[in-house]
Length: 262
Image (cartoon, rainbow, N blue to C red; front, side, top):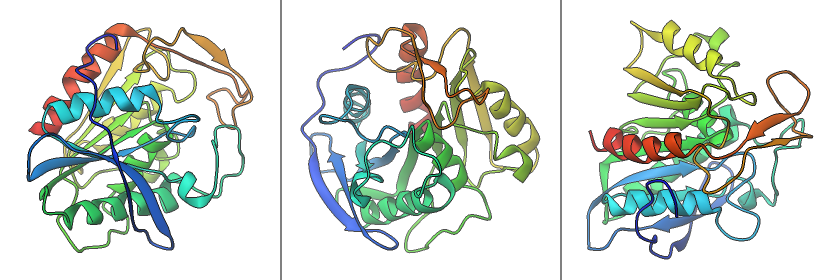
């Protein structure tokens, strides 16, 4: 592992739990010990959890977070519905504002039933499409099934914010957004506008823009390249840069656990 990763993550447990209209599957990573632990619901992007096993980026994050004492649950929003990667699919039948927000809430409730999880310390983390999901999920007007305390805090890595700006986005809980200044898939400017517009009527929301970083800046050892054929991109061409930015990756690995532990 590179740029700030920790020791290897423990092997995950495959779990299944009730969603709104289906049974969801996921991967649960636990720290050593009996707990109870603070926990994180971690939402994958449009590519899913990984084509041939768990994406190395997610395994690195599981390592970092379990090393800091968090249990981490990765719900499989696409595989649970018999779907593969959705980055080139349009229109999508599984959306951040509906199905995936419901999945996040179902994962929270599942974790809160476990004796090894602190029910008042379940946070939410998402990447790209999953990052958009977490921002939708914590809007005050979003439906939340009660059955346990709300999410404690939220982190979104390179989310798409453009559709949230005209909806006067705000959040019920503290939010941290990390995004690349050169991101041409989900541009930082929309997220900056969204956060600025929420001041005074939202729980605290902060954004960190990494100069020169592109989408997927936290992926391990991924040279920057142009992806094409995407269903959505900033300029409508279906083309966007993705790849590792070592400085942004290392800062995210430092900043996110500290934010979640507050």
